[in-house]
Length: 282
Image (cartoon, rainbow, N blue to C red; front, side, top):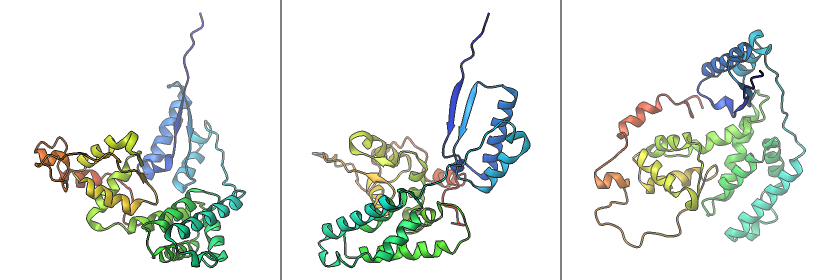
Protein backbone atom coordinates (compact mmCIF):
# COMPACT_ATOMS: atom_id res chain seq x y z
CA UNK A 1 0.00 0.00 0.00
CA UNK A 2 1.31 3.42 -0.93
CA UNK A 3 0.35 6.30 1.35
CA UNK A 4 0.28 9.70 -0.31
CA UNK A 5 0.92 12.59 2.07
CA UNK A 6 -0.18 15.99 0.73
CA UNK A 7 2.51 18.66 0.46
CA UNK A 8 1.64 22.28 1.05
CA UNK A 9 3.46 25.34 -0.27
CA UNK A 10 3.98 28.12 2.27
CA UNK A 11 5.10 31.64 1.40
CA UNK A 12 6.51 34.21 3.82
CA UNK A 13 6.61 37.70 2.32
CA UNK A 14 7.95 40.21 3.22
CA UNK A 15 9.81 38.26 5.90
CA UNK A 16 12.01 41.20 6.95
CA UNK A 17 8.92 42.95 8.38
CA UNK A 18 8.23 40.09 10.77
CA UNK A 19 8.71 41.16 14.42
CA UNK A 20 12.33 41.65 15.49
CA UNK A 21 15.61 40.41 14.01
CA UNK A 22 15.87 37.83 16.82
CA UNK A 23 12.40 36.52 16.01
CA UNK A 24 13.27 36.34 12.31
CA UNK A 25 16.36 34.25 13.04
CA UNK A 26 14.40 31.95 15.34
CA UNK A 27 11.66 31.40 12.75
CA UNK A 28 14.25 30.50 10.10
CA UNK A 29 15.87 27.98 12.44
CA UNK A 30 12.51 26.41 13.34
CA UNK A 31 11.59 26.03 9.68
CA UNK A 32 15.01 24.60 8.82
CA UNK A 33 14.75 22.09 11.68
CA UNK A 34 11.30 20.92 10.57
CA UNK A 35 12.54 20.53 6.98
CA UNK A 36 15.60 18.60 8.12
CA UNK A 37 13.52 16.22 10.25
CA UNK A 38 10.68 16.01 7.73
CA UNK A 39 8.23 16.68 10.55
CA UNK A 40 5.91 18.92 8.52
CA UNK A 41 4.45 18.55 4.99
CA UNK A 42 5.51 22.03 3.87
CA UNK A 43 7.63 23.49 1.10
CA UNK A 44 8.78 26.93 2.20
CA UNK A 45 9.55 30.03 0.14
CA UNK A 46 10.83 33.02 2.13
CA UNK A 47 11.09 36.42 0.46
CA UNK A 48 12.99 39.17 2.22
CA UNK A 49 15.34 42.08 1.93
CA UNK A 50 18.98 41.11 2.35
CA UNK A 51 19.23 42.34 5.91
CA UNK A 52 22.40 41.26 7.81
CA UNK A 53 20.75 39.10 10.50
CA UNK A 54 18.61 37.22 7.99
CA UNK A 55 21.55 36.63 5.62
CA UNK A 56 23.83 35.42 8.42
CA UNK A 57 21.18 33.01 9.70
CA UNK A 58 20.73 31.45 6.27
CA UNK A 59 24.52 30.97 6.07
CA UNK A 60 24.61 28.82 9.21
CA UNK A 61 25.48 25.19 8.40
CA UNK A 62 22.28 23.66 9.80
CA UNK A 63 20.20 26.11 7.76
CA UNK A 64 22.27 26.28 4.56
CA UNK A 65 22.24 22.48 4.24
CA UNK A 66 18.46 22.38 3.73
CA UNK A 67 17.89 25.68 1.91
CA UNK A 68 18.62 27.23 -1.44
CA UNK A 69 19.08 31.00 -1.63
CA UNK A 70 18.52 33.03 -4.78
CA UNK A 71 19.25 36.75 -5.02
CA UNK A 72 16.68 38.61 -7.09
CA UNK A 73 18.45 41.70 -8.44
CA UNK A 74 16.45 44.84 -9.11
CA UNK A 75 16.76 45.72 -12.77
CA UNK A 76 17.60 49.26 -13.90
CA UNK A 77 16.13 48.49 -17.30
CA UNK A 78 12.97 50.25 -16.14
CA UNK A 79 14.75 53.63 -15.74
CA UNK A 80 13.43 54.91 -19.06
CA UNK A 81 9.85 54.04 -18.16
CA UNK A 82 10.26 55.55 -14.69
CA UNK A 83 11.51 58.81 -16.24
CA UNK A 84 8.54 58.89 -18.60
CA UNK A 85 6.20 58.19 -15.68
CA UNK A 86 7.71 61.02 -13.61
CA UNK A 87 7.59 63.57 -16.44
CA UNK A 88 3.97 62.70 -17.16
CA UNK A 89 3.07 62.88 -13.48
CA UNK A 90 4.65 66.29 -12.96
CA UNK A 91 2.98 67.57 -16.12
CA UNK A 92 -0.39 66.48 -14.73
CA UNK A 93 0.33 68.29 -11.45
CA UNK A 94 1.11 71.53 -13.28
CA UNK A 95 -1.99 71.27 -15.47
CA UNK A 96 -4.30 70.44 -12.58
CA UNK A 97 -3.04 73.40 -10.55
CA UNK A 98 -3.08 75.69 -13.60
CA UNK A 99 0.58 76.67 -13.22
CA UNK A 100 1.37 76.29 -16.90
CA UNK A 101 4.17 78.87 -16.64
CA UNK A 102 6.19 76.14 -14.87
CA UNK A 103 5.76 73.66 -17.71
CA UNK A 104 9.15 74.27 -19.33
CA UNK A 105 11.25 74.86 -16.19
CA UNK A 106 9.91 72.52 -13.48
CA UNK A 107 11.15 70.08 -12.55
CA UNK A 108 14.63 70.38 -14.03
CA UNK A 109 16.33 67.58 -15.93
CA UNK A 110 18.73 67.19 -12.99
CA UNK A 111 15.76 66.76 -10.65
CA UNK A 112 14.31 64.04 -12.87
CA UNK A 113 17.66 62.23 -13.08
CA UNK A 114 18.01 62.35 -9.29
CA UNK A 115 14.56 60.85 -8.83
CA UNK A 116 15.15 58.13 -11.42
CA UNK A 117 18.43 57.22 -9.79
CA UNK A 118 16.81 57.15 -6.33
CA UNK A 119 14.05 54.85 -7.58
CA UNK A 120 16.63 52.11 -8.27
CA UNK A 121 14.22 50.41 -10.65
CA UNK A 122 11.30 50.48 -8.19
CA UNK A 123 8.08 52.14 -9.35
CA UNK A 124 6.95 52.40 -5.73
CA UNK A 125 9.36 55.31 -5.24
CA UNK A 126 8.21 57.65 -8.05
CA UNK A 127 4.58 56.80 -7.26
CA UNK A 128 5.02 57.94 -3.65
CA UNK A 129 6.96 61.05 -4.74
CA UNK A 130 4.26 62.16 -7.18
CA UNK A 131 1.46 61.58 -4.68
CA UNK A 132 3.38 63.46 -1.99
CA UNK A 133 4.12 66.44 -4.25
CA UNK A 134 0.62 66.63 -5.75
CA UNK A 135 -1.35 66.89 -2.50
CA UNK A 136 -2.61 69.12 -1.11
CA UNK A 137 -3.36 71.00 -4.28
CA UNK A 138 -1.72 74.31 -3.48
CA UNK A 139 1.21 76.47 -4.56
CA UNK A 140 3.65 74.64 -2.26
CA UNK A 141 4.19 71.73 -4.65
CA UNK A 142 7.63 73.08 -5.63
CA UNK A 143 8.71 73.21 -1.98
CA UNK A 144 7.50 69.66 -1.39
CA UNK A 145 9.55 68.37 -4.32
CA UNK A 146 12.59 70.28 -3.05
CA UNK A 147 12.22 68.69 0.39
CA UNK A 148 12.15 65.24 -1.25
CA UNK A 149 15.29 66.00 -3.27
CA UNK A 150 17.12 67.15 -0.13
CA UNK A 151 16.16 63.93 1.67
CA UNK A 152 17.40 61.84 -1.23
CA UNK A 153 20.66 63.79 -1.31
CA UNK A 154 21.25 63.12 2.41
CA UNK A 155 20.36 59.44 1.99
CA UNK A 156 23.05 59.03 -0.69
CA UNK A 157 25.70 59.94 1.89
CA UNK A 158 24.92 56.76 3.82
CA UNK A 159 27.02 53.69 3.09
CA UNK A 160 24.56 51.03 1.98
CA UNK A 161 24.03 48.69 -0.94
CA UNK A 162 20.32 48.37 -0.29
CA UNK A 163 18.14 49.49 -3.22
CA UNK A 164 15.49 50.44 -0.67
CA UNK A 165 17.61 53.11 1.05
CA UNK A 166 16.00 56.04 -0.78
CA UNK A 167 12.50 54.61 -0.47
CA UNK A 168 12.96 54.11 3.28
CA UNK A 169 14.21 57.68 3.63
CA UNK A 170 11.12 58.98 1.84
CA UNK A 171 8.79 56.92 4.05
CA UNK A 172 10.51 58.17 7.21
CA UNK A 173 10.12 61.77 5.98
CA UNK A 174 6.40 61.19 5.38
CA UNK A 175 5.98 59.76 8.88
CA UNK A 176 7.74 62.75 10.41
CA UNK A 177 5.11 65.06 8.92
CA UNK A 178 2.38 63.48 11.08
CA UNK A 179 1.40 65.66 14.07
CA UNK A 180 2.17 64.14 17.46
CA UNK A 181 -1.53 64.22 18.39
CA UNK A 182 -2.44 61.62 15.76
CA UNK A 183 0.88 59.78 15.36
CA UNK A 184 -0.01 56.82 17.59
CA UNK A 185 -3.30 56.20 15.80
CA UNK A 186 -1.57 56.49 12.42
CA UNK A 187 1.02 53.88 13.45
CA UNK A 188 -1.71 51.47 14.47
CA UNK A 189 -3.56 51.92 11.19
CA UNK A 190 -0.34 51.20 9.29
CA UNK A 191 0.06 47.99 11.24
CA UNK A 192 -2.94 46.53 9.41
CA UNK A 193 -2.42 44.99 5.93
CA UNK A 194 -5.44 46.66 4.35
CA UNK A 195 -3.81 49.87 3.16
CA UNK A 196 -6.43 50.54 0.50
CA UNK A 197 -9.66 51.80 2.00
CA UNK A 198 -12.17 51.82 -0.82
CA UNK A 199 -15.69 53.04 -0.16
CA UNK A 200 -17.27 50.35 -2.31
CA UNK A 201 -15.53 47.37 -0.72
CA UNK A 202 -13.90 48.45 2.54
CA UNK A 203 -15.99 51.22 4.04
CA UNK A 204 -16.94 48.87 6.85
CA UNK A 205 -13.27 48.25 7.58
CA UNK A 206 -12.71 52.00 7.97
CA UNK A 207 -15.52 52.23 10.51
CA UNK A 208 -14.29 49.16 12.35
CA UNK A 209 -10.76 50.52 12.57
CA UNK A 210 -12.01 53.86 13.85
CA UNK A 211 -14.01 52.10 16.56
CA UNK A 212 -11.17 49.72 17.40
CA UNK A 213 -8.71 52.55 17.95
CA UNK A 214 -11.34 54.85 19.46
CA UNK A 215 -10.76 57.61 16.94
CA UNK A 216 -13.29 59.64 15.03
CA UNK A 217 -13.62 59.42 11.28
CA UNK A 218 -12.55 63.08 11.24
CA UNK A 219 -9.24 62.01 12.78
CA UNK A 220 -9.03 59.16 10.27
CA UNK A 221 -9.29 61.68 7.44
CA UNK A 222 -6.55 63.77 9.09
CA UNK A 223 -4.33 60.70 9.18
CA UNK A 224 -5.08 59.95 5.54
CA UNK A 225 -4.17 63.51 4.55
CA UNK A 226 -0.74 62.95 6.13
CA UNK A 227 -0.29 59.52 4.54
CA UNK A 228 -1.92 60.14 1.17
CA UNK A 229 1.38 59.37 -0.59
CA UNK A 230 1.38 55.76 0.59
CA UNK A 231 -2.27 54.80 1.19
CA UNK A 232 -5.46 55.10 -0.81
CA UNK A 233 -8.86 56.00 0.59
CA UNK A 234 -12.06 56.96 -1.17
CA UNK A 235 -14.72 58.75 0.85
CA UNK A 236 -18.27 57.51 0.48
CA UNK A 237 -20.26 59.31 -2.21
CA UNK A 238 -23.52 58.42 -0.45
CA UNK A 239 -23.61 60.48 2.77
CA UNK A 240 -26.21 59.88 5.47
CA UNK A 241 -29.53 61.57 4.74
CA UNK A 242 -30.12 62.12 8.43
CA UNK A 243 -28.00 61.81 11.56
CA UNK A 244 -29.17 60.76 14.98
CA UNK A 245 -28.95 63.89 17.17
CA UNK A 246 -27.25 61.87 19.95
CA UNK A 247 -24.29 61.11 17.67
CA UNK A 248 -21.28 63.39 17.97
CA UNK A 249 -19.35 63.24 14.69
CA UNK A 250 -16.16 64.17 16.52
CA UNK A 251 -16.20 60.85 18.42
CA UNK A 252 -16.38 57.18 17.40
CA UNK A 253 -19.90 55.86 16.89
CA UNK A 254 -19.77 53.43 19.82
CA UNK A 255 -18.61 56.16 22.19
CA UNK A 256 -21.69 58.17 21.25
CA UNK A 257 -23.92 55.19 22.04
CA UNK A 258 -22.14 54.60 25.30
CA UNK A 259 -21.40 50.93 24.55
CA UNK A 260 -17.77 50.70 23.44
CA UNK A 261 -17.07 47.05 22.52
CA UNK A 262 -13.34 47.60 22.22
CA UNK A 263 -10.52 48.08 24.74
CA UNK A 264 -10.07 51.61 26.13
CA UNK A 265 -7.52 54.00 24.69
CA UNK A 266 -4.97 53.11 27.38
CA UNK A 267 -4.77 49.61 25.89
CA UNK A 268 -3.36 51.12 22.68
CA UNK A 269 -0.28 52.33 24.53
CA UNK A 270 0.26 48.86 25.99
CA UNK A 271 -0.15 47.18 22.63
CA UNK A 272 2.12 49.70 20.97
CA UNK A 273 4.99 48.67 23.22
CA UNK A 274 5.02 45.31 21.40
CA UNK A 275 5.20 46.83 17.94
CA UNK A 276 8.40 47.92 16.22
CA UNK A 277 7.04 50.17 13.48
CA UNK A 278 8.94 53.44 13.04
CA UNK A 279 11.00 53.20 16.22
CA UNK A 280 12.90 56.14 17.63
CA UNK A 281 16.08 55.33 15.70
CA UNK A 282 14.28 56.07 12.41
